[in-house]
Amino acid sequence: MSPAPRVRIQPADFDLSAEVAALRAGDGGVGAVCSFVGTVRDRTAGQPGAVSAMELEHYPGMTERAIEAMIDDAHRRFDLRAARVVHRVGLLQPLDQIVLVVVTSAHRGESFKGCEFLMDYLKTQAPFWKKETMPEGARWVDARVADDAALARWGLTAPNA
Amino acid sequence: MRMSTSEHTITVRYFASLREALGVQEAVAVVEGSSLGQLRDALIARGGAHAQALARGRAMRCALNQVMADEATVVPAGAEVAFFPPVTGG
Image (tube, rainbow over all chains, first blue to last red; front, side, top):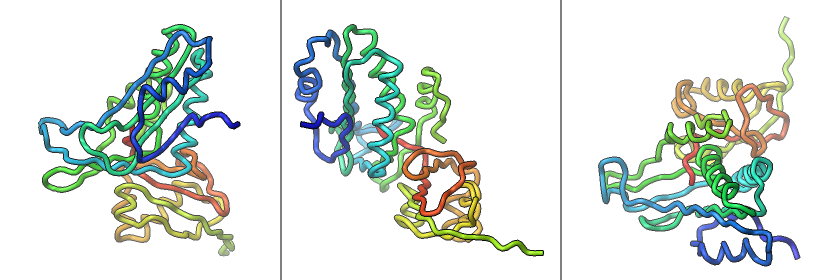
């Protein structure tokens, strides 16, 4: 039986608890599990309630491959036992889940760092693009300078722009 | 004396706002040995929607055969190239 995929790109929602259970399954060496969930906000700067929908586009093939490489990098940098990323695509609504990162390790330090590293990396290098629907029409979200700065903390200097 | 130039065809894919401006993808003839930067310049030189969407000064990333690449990278025959705005996933 082939191992479960480390990266899934899908329109369907995910269940955090089920994903954690699957990642931990049978691994008695796991002492720490760390997860991150990103969700759709209904607002953008200074305009609460303005965002009614969000569309996620991706580059099939490249997106999976890019995140797989990030997970490989995370394993080289941190003593992780396993890692998994699920990222939704398609049309999402405010309050929907967008992305899940789960990592396991023996002790908590590595999991905390591995999880944050993967999110910082994904935010600046994984080929996805968000389009928000506002009252005045749909607009593409701009990449945030803060995300590039977050990536630099890990010694990675490939900027988004 | 004019040197003969060898050309090959590649596929260029566009995403997000570039896709809306230029379409999903197109076949492009490129001079052998061209870099991604030279390819971008050649597309800009077409004028119109290409010149506007790919203009220098607009933040842009590119990929070669589904791996992020910089503009100095040479484009081989049969390659899949992609141009897209800075990513906004997660």
